[in-house]
Image (cartoon, rainbow, N blue to C red; front, side, top):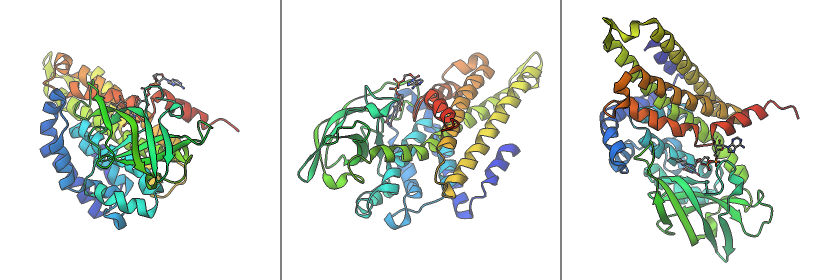
Length: 388
Ligand SMILES: Cc1cc2nc3c(=O)[nH]c(=O)nc-3n(C[C@H](O)[C@H](O)[C@H](O)COP(=O)(O)OP(=O)(O)OC[C@H]3O[C@@H](n4cnc5c(N)ncnc54)[C@H](O)[C@@H]3O)c2cc1C
């Protein structure tokens, strides 16, 4: 569709990045999409999709070249998130989570730490971002996981819940509180757990509404030891790093939501151009045209705004937190609306599992909840306009 093609070309990616996006689109359509329905039904972890992603070396696109990567622009990365997600939302979030978890390492870890972890990530290691706890969700500062220094080690006690990739990850980016600092916010610290060297107990994985092939684990840390040199920055620097890393993962989550929204839009448009009632195609009814106009316009606006955020990030803007929240909130609300309307436009067929829109609607819901719920983002955006 010309409107959306023009939006993509507006990004003006260099030729080599466009080739990356094209090959990701081809892989997503030819290999990942055909497996999506079965993975949704059996809920198994899609290892063959991960292998296909690693065959293209996609983790390398967010790892700096000097640590084994082949870094592309953020805009290029976002396009790839959309393509994979449109084929299989679960696979999209599995891959994007590698970026979400490793971005703080890329931005803030020491040279020695980067040398130890990033080459393996570029080669295709899986990673998890571990923030949420049973009693600390929207307010992550309420976390209770404790980091106790002990000689050359740090001893970890506590638990994390709802951790994407948690049971399969090679690296956990783990937030907790430094035992020697009393102030609850000032004590938040962050370290990397190498799960092969420091095994972590998986208490269980969730049986979910959507994203059924991505694993969502509860992890228990019962005296898990990691070397002190795995601490990123200093004790107590965690909150600053947490906020900085969320700013970059939120546009990524927005791209993921737009991948779902675009897939639902394409399915709906194709269906209403075929299906006939009362001797006319469904798309010919005026009430349907009005709805389609609203959905297409909203999708185009969201795509354009995310392109704007990508440019801010690629241009090195120092603070884009409000824009990141806006993109995440709006794209995820659109994903929910778009998928709900796509089901509606399919009539009764939209409600049965044989049609992709049924899965997309279930996949869409979590995008309004994770990476900061949309209520929380509305507060953050509103607060940005409070005069100090
Ligand atoms: C499938 C899945 C994957 C996930 N992956 C990860 C992951 O990889 N890593 C990770 O750390 N976490 C992950 N999460 C956790 C997710 O980020 C949290 O579920 C989310 O932050 C909300 O926390 P909560 O579930 O505890 O809800 P709560 O914080 O208990 O919120 C309950 C309700 O209250 C509302 N609410 C809370 N505070 C406020 C407020 N101040 N103002 C207005 N309303 C408010 C919320 O918006 C929500 O509607 C995942 C969750 C799921 C379901």
